[in-house]
Length: 546
Image (cartoon, rainbow, N blue to C red; front, side, top):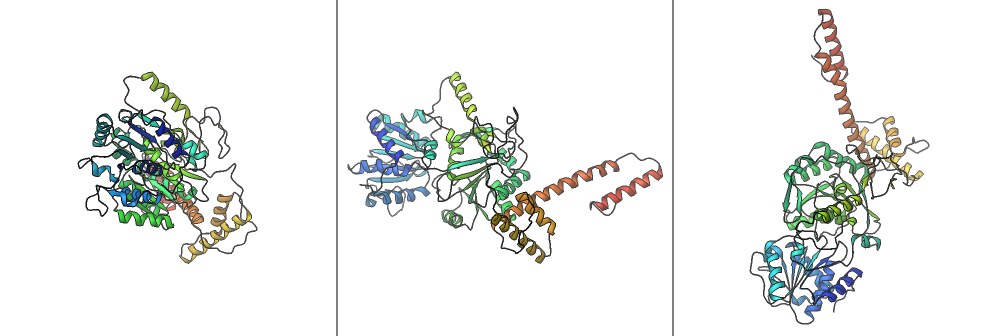
């Protein structure tokens, strides 16, 4: 008897399975983030074990075996009956009624015999031998198979699972408070028109990784990621999803240079190192986890913001990653998502991606496919041209900044600008908040003076005005230690100023270069021209000698 009570989604799934149990041999349970699929597995397993029947639970990765076994024991399943299919593991015992294994282990050895139920977690992952096992069990031995997935969108699933069980949706979980809401922004959108498409077993059709990595490693795009987070990330615990290790390292270095502690975690990061990195993140020592091919399954830390810098065509990849930020936590109303990949424009919001049938390769249903594509296009969000907030389909006036576009203006958007400061419905700052910011700006000024790189009183006043739209009149000038929020804002301003100065210098030098290339006139005119060029170069600090 388990010591937990089934939630709404779990109870619905159990009722649906009981209803169709005799009619079908294989089931795919559509179990979104937050619906409790490990708990559902425990309820199903308990029903078999209580009758002396054997259950094999398959996890997608070795790292999740111990985690699943601990959860089963916490839920009340008999720990003495939980065995591991894992060579040399102390709990390796083929005679126990509950066997837990990783898919990678099973495909390298003979499949266990005499099981009564096979449960496969993350069943959308394509592993040829596992699919052959499913077909053999359901067609020849009549052993029941239950697949679990929050993203059962893989095109082959309909050929191996006979019945889709859909107990809930992401939208319903949000409405019931099981998952939090989201706020999507699209500060930048890379040009991927020339990137080829490839296919993987895990995510299906998607952009070719090496080509998209080359684009996303551009200094301007990475700079936008850092400056946008400094301005609008609110110092929230954040996960950044990158294309490959090189891209992740570059993003991490740029954040560290800006004074933000970020660490890289990849699929090849050793297990012990991974636990330490995640621990530092949960304690607040690390502010941003930069991920490559990991933090998808089995990662339940409190994530308040997501930087999505991994362009994708895969609905599975999109939902799996965004789902990391949708879990609820105290004081968390919504997860901020900064999409620097164009994926939200391409695929839509996570709660708008739904299927009522298991996908399977069709033989020419072109009209139906075209109709579904048109319906999906109608549901895609639109970007506000002012604040880059992603508006739901059919929403005309931006709910974030109140901007009302002219007819047709929100069809094509400017994707080269950074995310602007939100306004409109934003709560007006209090006098206490203004005083706090001004005191911290003064602290920063004194800190710079001690370092020998002072900033002027005018700079301080203009920094305050940029933030609040008013001058710091009537405020006390006593200094207060910098907070991460104010520090990040100042760093953002410095980066933006440096970019603007570089651009202005390039524009000012251009006429000088054109002048120097002009054809010579008389000797006197040529001498006057050289004197003028020299003076311009000296004034602009381009050089001291011709």
